[in-house]
Image (cartoon, rainbow, N blue to C red):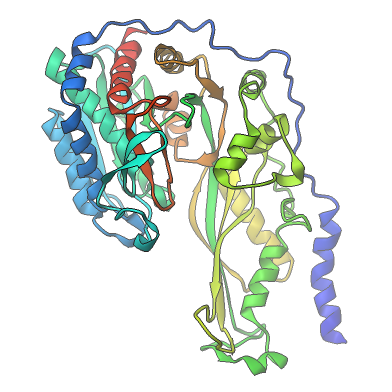
Amino acid sequence: MKTLLTLLALCLPALAHAGDAVRPKHAIDLSNPYSTDNVPTYAGDHAAVHAYIDAEIEAHVAALQRWMRQRSISALNVGVLDMAEMVRDDFKALGFAEAELVETGGHPGVWGFYDAGAERTLMVYMMYDVQPVNPEDWRSPPFAAEIVEVPEGRAIMARGATNQKGPQRAFLNAVESILAVDGKLPVNLMITAEGEEELGSPHYPEIIDRYEDRLRQADGVIFPMSGQDPAGQTGVVLGVKGIIYWELESKGGAWGGPTEAEIHGSFKAIADSPVLRLTKAISSLVGEDGNTILVDGYYDGVRPPTAEEQSLIAGYLEQQDDAMLRQMLGVERWIDGMEGVDVLHDLIYAPSMNVDGIWAGYTGEGVKTILPHMATAKMDSRLPVGMDPQEALAKIRAHLDTHGFEDVEMNVLAAYPASQTSVSASLVQAAIGVYKRYGQAPTVNPRVAGSAPFYEFTERLGLPMIPFGLGHGRGAHAPNEVYVVESSGNVAGLAEIEKAYVDLLYAFAAD
């Protein structure tokens, strides 16, 4: 009876608090949708550079394949240094005055500076690392970088094809083409490449530390990427959510459970289970729906939508396709059956609480009846603008302690805040103008639900920052990742991708 009462006492605080927590909901004024109609279409003439790209396209495809064939799995430290040296050497080959490895507390960064003597300077953020692979899940070996047929045309299949080696090397191909034809670039370039983006960028700030005073003199930042969906629609993304990423680990100890190693499963009759304790700890973080975060004060810092963001959401909503997104992700229903503006609201303004993976004990074939002595889970929470990562982590730790899980260890692996750029920034206007030159007017999304260390640019350096690039790829972090290099119709092929990068450099220089 005493044990039962103790368990009830641990559960009651969570149950009582569950009725108090409410996911943030803000009113969105949809009466003034943002439109790109007033942004001039870029009309600069760079025919000679474009012709050079067409003539050299086979060599440019080969340059992409060379990058993709070099393994650079940051989580396993496989090929990372070799890839960093390849990036550095490519900067040197292009004629960068400065091209060097940057030592950090983890994998090295790469710095490149091209001095064109221009009035404006563009900073370029790059990542050279990739996710691990399970080769047996791939149609083609993940580091063979072979050309395959896809519905959109012909594509390179490889780990890192679209995330992000393909778009980044395509950008450097465009730089090479301008230099070959015009002799110099229209803007100065500063490039900071990291090898730990897939680890949460824990040491990227050290790269910024080394060049911070110079980077502050830049006029804007881009992240080369494949920005078209299968129908060819382009989009401008003005921000990202922040993220905290941590491990929770439950081990047998003074509270109960085996402490040294697994024991026979029959002893569960008299011994506690670290696995069940971990799942209880995780479960205490959210309500019955699995979506409402019960951590005290967790939603307090979320900044409400600004007038500009509401206008952007209204404009973006006109082109949103919930059904297509669900189909792409293989999800049949959103939380609470939400749709339309509610989907955009929660993607932008709702913090999340997610279990990325959980493991313990025996998971092989057949039967092995054991009581494991430890269990581990990896978790993340995406943070809207206004939420401080360290405060969020402290609140989670306090919640676990308050609910009797002091013994559950919490190991923080990554933490950084959200990022935001205004649509009125000259870099954003130049990008919209270039996108309009190559087809449909782009959608403009105030912020996506994913995370990247863009706060280093917008918050720390005070610079406008956007991902940019034509082209289509898919399968990031998944098997059979591809990047289209020859289009069958709707999306840009590699030549057009590179021409758009050329145009952006000139459009940005002219602003």
